[in-house]
Image 1: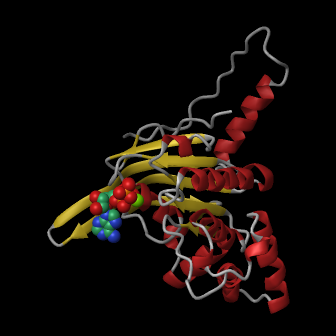
Image 2: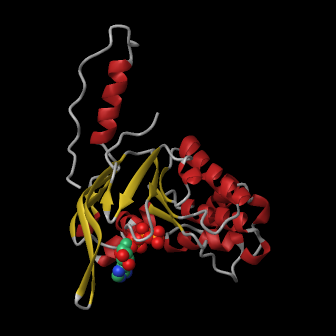
Amino acid sequence: MAEEKFPPVEVQREPDSAPLAGLNRYATVRAVQEALVQLRNVTKIYRHGEIDVTALNNVSLDIAAGEFVALMGPSGSGKSTLLHIVAGVDRPTSGQCLVQGLDIGTLSETALATWRNQHIGFVFQTFNLIPVLTAFENVELPLLLTGLSARERRVHVTAALELVGLADRMRHLPRQLSGGQEQRVAIARALVTDPTLIIADEPTGNLDAHSATEVLTLLQQLNQTIGKTIIMVTHDPRAAGYAQRIVHLEKGELLNGTGEPRS
Ligand SMILES: Nc1ncnc2c1ncn2[C@@H]1O[C@H](COP(=O)(O)OP(=O)(O)OP(=O)(O)O)[C@@H](O)[C@H]1O
Ligand SMILES: [Mg+2]
């Protein structure tokens, strides 16, 4: 799908429109200009011997700071590939992914790994907690790569577990937690470094309806109360309903990616 440039700003105003309508419109334009994530004509081709698979085809998408975006689409449409590119786990074959204005594709492997630790909190469908570590130790893991002292780490880990409502489960091993609680620990682990972006790939895919609601409500709260920017892949329209904006991918192309956030 061809890239849609920023649409021209509507200058007409309804005679009876609220006095701030113009300002609000300005705010929207500013948000677009200052998008936290800017995908510019991103194409990703995986090479399998003789066969090329185009996972993403010329995708352009802006995500503003503080947005909660749900990414939907059929299996194989490129959703995880898009997340991996924004998270700096994978690189585009062509095009750019800018985060806070930085083209992360230009970073060396080492610089990209450091950037990822500082800026990305990743939440997986299967939680990916380390089974022999307690909830506290799992959440502490990303902080071991920082220069924080044990005492400072404890403060951050405790705060993250409190945010997800599991301060009383710190000493539990993953197998002593419900699926929903495990995913909340994983969200605490994603949050503990105070990343720029939370990226979640089908975070409720392995959860029952009740636990899914818990996790989605938590993500929504993190977005609304501490302003975390969240990009979440989901197959579930109900889950997507927790986001402010739904972006659809099909066969590696965006269907409505430049749509403005729902108010
Ligand atoms: N590492 C890889 N090597 C080769 N091909 C890949 C790789 N990762 C993804 N692909 C291919 O790229 C396409 C998009 O895959 P992707 O995992 O992004 O889809 P998805 O939308 O996340 O699907 P699902 O909903 O099943 O998770 C698929 O055809 C897939 O086979
Ligand atoms: Mg996927």
